[in-house]
Length: 397
Ligand code: CTP
Image 1 (cartoon, rainbow, N blue to C red):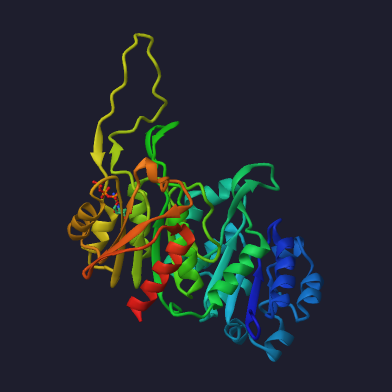
Image 2 (cartoon, helix red, strand yellow; image 1 turned 30 degrees about the vertical axis):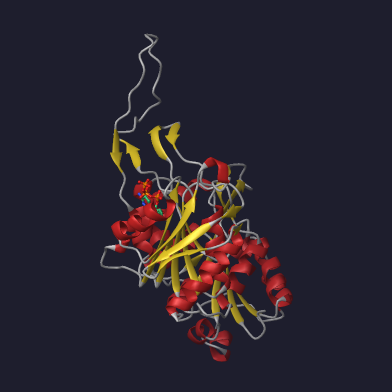
């Protein structure tokens, strides 16, 4: 799968560095050649000898190594790879990349390269959530860097949350997806998915029953056809697919910003069940019963319509696909929705409780386009996704 592909693996200095050794082993087994480069800090966690032995390649460690420079200069090293992978990408490395610093071998390689770069961040949860890291992340994404993970879970430092290095298998899947050849190779497709959560106060929110299953399946199907996928997801039940660029959001407002930041794209599929309204002035502290029996009242404001904003905006992808969740007069409502929002296609589905579609594993959709309504038989959400991805590939060809 990776036969003939050359990876430059930059190993950052974090407790997760040991997993990079497993990544070397798995990538080689998949046919890739792996050249490791270790930061100084990485050498505190894994030895250059382990990396070199597993890679069966020379390991690069020092910017000013005269022998290395005579054999292969750092510029050439950074460009001779088909893909540069940074795992684990520490907060420090991400900061250097975002700021354009080049004061050691790893950061210099990253500045000098003209090959695609993929990073798998790993750090303490507070460091990950720090505004500086999130700012750097946005900058790196804007620079076209693919970001894998981090996963959420218990961490070596004893805390819990996002910050764990993605499993080597998931990083490998992302690398394989990067090289996957298909009708959508070279295309960028944006997918929104999942529900949004609109806060009432710090502990309560308004949500809906979307599981994110259909959007996730669509993102995976587009990836399988070779597309570079930006996946903007609300808090969904199902995990995002590997090998796509994941942007996690909570509210409709955040989803709109993430979508706008991910554009331009060749096509966009809006599968998210975005809340239509948000609570005005969500309380900063928990709303308490005051003992008088008085009930709280909420005022609502309308959320931005993300599909309509993108369909009618200046950075409109050439193909925009929306969904229409309806409970009655499905075709008529969906046809009107297509016109009102200004998208190219609408996948209309009947979400009446009796259909079991919302939160279920199957979907029965009708594709509404300029050409009219085309009913698809009831099938699994993966099959709907595969069919839609194939149609998108046809339309963009
Ligand atoms: N959508 C969106 N932003 C919103 C609301 C909806 O991007 N604020 C998108 C959904 O992702 C979907 C399409 O618009 O692709 C239609 O969503 P749906 O809930 O069926 O329609 P609404 O616009 O909410 O209309 P209504 O609730 O009146 O049926």
